Image (tube, rainbow, N blue to C red):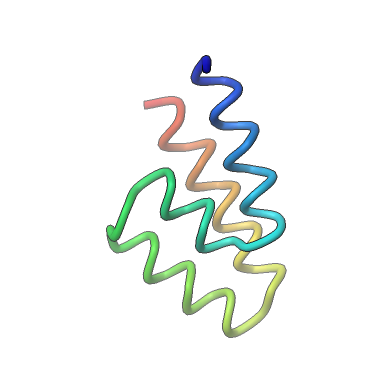
Length: 60
């Protein structure tokens, strides 16, 4: 699978369950724990953070 396809799948998973998309991108890094906190505080902030992490890390 190409990297673009993997990022697309991660973004779809991030919309359904934001911490899962972040975990697949960075593992148990700080971004994962921040995303769990944001998702508990509100589903939408968790999605925004997850998509941002996937887009940011995917370009590096």
